[in-house]
Amino acid sequence: MERFPYENVPLPHDQLPILIFEKHRDSGEPGCAFHWHEELEFYYVAAGGVLLGCGGEQDWLCPGDVGFVNSCIPHRGMAFLDHTKHYIIQVNLEFFQGETEYATRRSYASLLLEKLRDAPVFLRGDKELAGVFEKLIQEWNHKAPGMELAVKACLFQIAVRLLRAAPLSNPALPSEQSGTDSLRRVQEALLYLASHYDHPEEVTLTCVASKLGLSVPYLCRVFRRYTGRTVIGYTNELRCARAAALIRGGVPLTEAGRQVGIEDYNYFSRMFKKTTGHSPSSFREGK
Image (cartoon, rainbow, N blue to C red; front, side):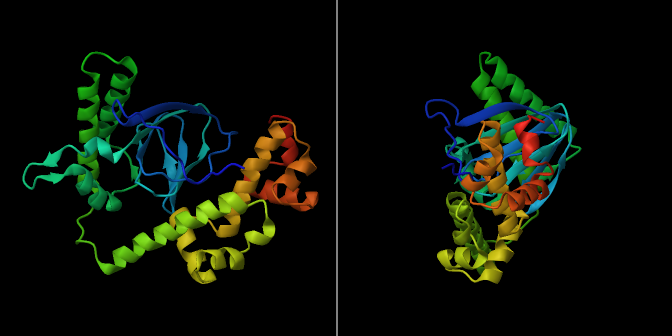
């Protein structure tokens, strides 16, 4: 069974601990499921548009825009415009571990962990920042002599822009610690749903809340805060993502429904259409 939410990013250990992917998407392609990882992640849009959902927020990124996903925050690329070209940059905080702030001798990694929780998800209209991302991508692709230093310089410029974009905040207070706990609870819920979405009796609100030791109202509240989705709505997205993959692989429609825990095909078809905007048969026909 696929597990969607936690992503183990295979960053290199003997090189710079970053990865850069170039992606091409069209409007008919579904986005990924909500997931999270420990690495910082950036979306940089070169053409088209990406609807990014992150930490309960969602909005479109257009060419030149940047999306910032902080460590361990649930997120997903939700939808795309035609002819979209975008880049995903993943950076392990170990990248900053050996560097210190001159005035305090404090690790930049610890500084970023503290400060970036308030950094904005969407950074728009910043031509200088867009230029830094263009330079970063160019250096990464060309692998010219001195590439490591050039990449490092770009990432520190990006970190500075994020730190300066984040509002000033007080040192961690008890309420913020409880926010950390609620995020952990949402991550636990994501992992649980990923492993049980094909067993309807195990993903009712009452059952999920009981398994996690939470009240139903609290589960619903914090889950929506960090994902922008209801628990049931997100569970149906997981079912539809898996069912679409099965259908494209040649599995009959009714059997695809059964494999994601829905015996009644009429109900499956209605849920699939409501969730994805397309009928199950359209995925079988490759539309």
